[in-house]
Length: 431
Image (cartoon, rainbow, N blue to C red; front, side, top):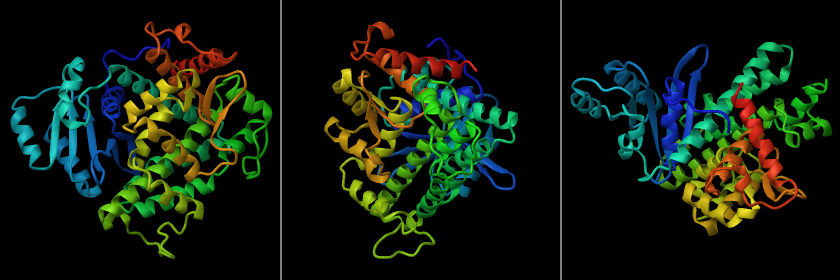
């Protein structure tokens, strides 16, 4: 990449820097979650889910890069009560006099405090608060680039919405993203969360095709729209930064949210925690999610028999936003080993983790595709800038020099595809 991360991250960049450590430790990470109705109630910096515990432990992380004090501790305690969380962590980048006294008082409120004054010693400062003993600094860097990519995609969406107020697609995409990333989180019952997620998913079954229709002057409201060949080619072969790079990101984010909450439901149900699994639904014939397609309910029961299904949300978060949604077939055995290392799923169980996507979201001919002359198996209709993140993962993980030229790949277009994906993410990050 020819873009550089800030050496001294502040504000949102400091939040992303800290988040990357927790992400790299094997936790599921959700960021920048806003509770907004008539007006904004609160914004959570980070929520982590630890699937090493049964049921999964969900924790609030509040990250302060500037001034902080007891008011921040009490505010965090208020959020915990509001959201019915049992613990939280306040992470700050400057120390205070009597810090041990502050930590002791905070602990009585079930709040821990971590001080990260020296960024080079971040792993040591946070050591007690995540499950991994060894954080790979390359992972931290790559996750920061991935967060930056997401941030710039959403900024790009906001810019286009302001510049072209008559385009319905931008308003619909913003609404869809907010529905799957913000409001639903503040619903305690997972059944109700899944119902809201699926309602959004059902409302936008072909949103990328509708966006493509509007790109060529068609009607966004056309529910039967298809992606014109020209737009498809520009998006996935020429790798142009366009509306479909946003819509495909949001569509797969929606599926990931559904997958995570469905898995969480089974884990809490198995643990007998009814406050998380009850809802205003009517159970019929043993089906909890009677508002979902029969195939989803059957699929959920099927994947819940998999030994490592409890880590599927972590697996798919890594596969989408770190690995870029593809497998480099020239390094297939190493790819599976790397996936196993990062997600905690043994190599021989990874095919089941991949199958889970097709089981829950059946797609004719499956979700994965390999094209002629490119030795890559990739997820269909995935946002290309994140594939650029994945290209850089392979550059760093499979060469001693960190150069694309030293990747040993076959196939006429394999190398060029990796370069095109890299170039697009660089273009987006430079905006």
